Image (cartoon, rainbow, N blue to C red; front, side):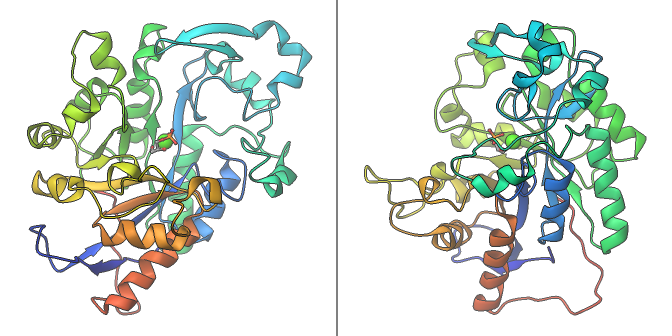
Length: 359
Ligand code: G3P
Ligand code: CA
């Protein structure tokens, strides 16, 4: 991704007349390859994304690996591996009963013997061609990929890890923050300008991280419910409460980004159509937060009923978002480039040093 700066559509935001739209490659280029594999991240970089997104969980020996959830039967071949049949279990994770195989019951060496599979074979049958080829990567490997790809391409490749179920992992003695910070320290990525942004749906671990590293943090929010850690501690605040003007100002004390569901920016009507944007983006900007929405996916079942993926991306950019998580990062890159071109604003001359940090 080159720097993508597009026009701010109106004066509602106290912002400069140009701005960046960052593309976060959601689980890599997960629209084209099994998610959370080195090959998925590498393809995302090849397609123009400068930010790759691993979700992080822990192994039994406390190594962070990239999976969307700790239950791995949907994204690996573990169910077909008789040597691990006795690891099948039912657990309660964030108050939800889950049955399957869990990363915390496998050493890294054991997990390495598994192979990744496409999560959505009905939706993305082409991706099943890659089933069985790729391993589950560690966070260390992903960071090293970003560093080597930055060197190879001359672009600064950033990493936006999401801590998955941080309270749960802490409760079983495998807290995520320690190994996450250790990896960042290994590569010197703990300062404010480091090419990293750490995400969480919980609040407490982000607040803790804010005391331990200076990198940008992303407070994710859901269109319903409450952060698990707040609810578990008796704090009755919901995600909706976090998005009030005072809630946003509070988030801005520890985070750089707000990461809402895209429907919180572009609400859908009963028929699934998008229309006018909500006031969330200007309110977040007023609180000093940048906004990155999740998740744009090109397949029809994920799209609004009244437009296509280009229309949805264009509408999000017009609504003022600063970033977008996308399963097909090339499409988001194209929309950001097109917006910049159509709006006729700042472009960078060839050879100008790029500033692609996610902060
Ligand atoms: O982290 C942004 C987005 O990825 C959050 O949703 O469930 O895909 O991790 P999820
Ligand atoms: Ca995520």
